[in-house]
Amino acid sequence: MAETIYTIPINEAFEKQEGCPFCRLRRELEASSLEYIMGPALMEPDVRMETNRRGFCARHYGSMMEMKNRLGLALLVESRLGEVSRLLEKSLSMEKKLFGIRKQEASVGEEILNATSSCFVCYRIEVFEEKYISNSLSMWRKDPDFQEQLKKQPFFCLKHTGALLEKAQSALTDKEYAGFRAALMTVNMSYAEKLTGDLRGFIKSFDHRFAADGLTPEQQSSLDRCIEFLAGKTI
Ligand SMILES: [Zn+2]
Ligand SMILES: [Zn+2]
Image (cartoon, rainbow, N blue to C red; front, side, top):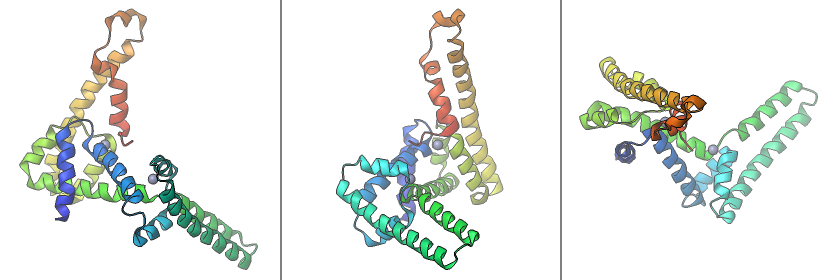
């Protein structure tokens, strides 16, 4: 059952064959995580403890502001603020007790930095993404149709290529890993080769001697597509 939860979205993302399938899954995870926290999970005590502890990053506070549920967001922020106030109070009492000890002051700063660098939504995305990656590797092991589907993808961005290969090294046997790596690299190398040609055509169009030649749609979109390949398209 648990496996099916992850298998269905993976299959759906791979069927689309548009861009990196894991970037697509990540964008969907971000949208569903925001809907989850601003919807059914908003008043759940267990989830509230988690959001109080982790807080949110500036980007996801911004996304929640756009979701037009100001009361819900205000309730989340109020509890988080309570948690942060306790942290500040704690740091003040520690400082009083250990007045003049710089080392202790530094660790308080570290604690505050930790409190501002975590995010409930980012964390939830990471947890699910890890499951998508490990599940897609077990699908590769068991399902020849999925192997064919993987080979038909236009490309995998470098971030997800790295994450897949890293996980594959421990999740697959040596023989499986060699087959998986070859399939992934074949997809990416042929895409990178075509992309480089398109980008060169795009660059050439800035030279007035070739200005009249016009650009193909592939050349026109090549810069966007290069960035997507190099850095992913997770937003
Ligand atoms: Zn990606
Ligand atoms: Zn975040």
